[in-house]
Image (cartoon, rainbow, N blue to C red; front, top):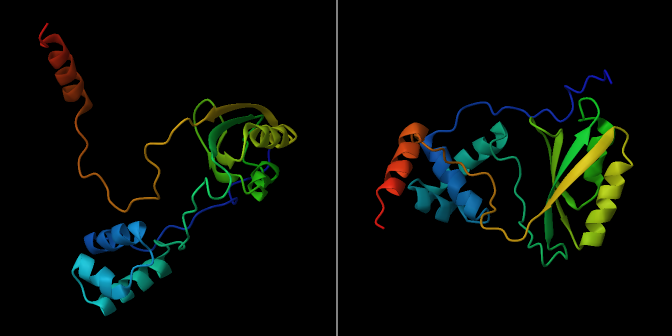
Length: 187
């Protein structure tokens, strides 16, 4: 399979880097995108017109791709969440495989590195519906195997967050601190 797939689903990079005020605005909007510009400005400490202009700029730059409702899975009749690893022959991200997006049960499709080619996030109404989706995958040319992971419970699920961690702890120090704490525990 020598098909060039570089042009498939390429994302645009936003024009400029986010500053602290952009991140504050996006943080509030990630919680509630229906907030008024007056309330948004008050929450981040700028005037409503300034908040409006910044939000317009964030939309133009692509930092805000779209505004959407987060639908409750139970209300939509799709309470079962699963992640499906798809193994393919060749590169994997072919238009035929990416056509799986036509099914509303498929929420996300990722081309990944590691022991699999594609990772899908899917929500279905039942195990029977998941089985039907897997059958559809196996009918796709190039798909050779799948591994499904059904979610029992979810502790955190959220949209992209605008903040970034300023500094990650040094792994070696923390690992040693954990060993020291374990070795020095009472008992």
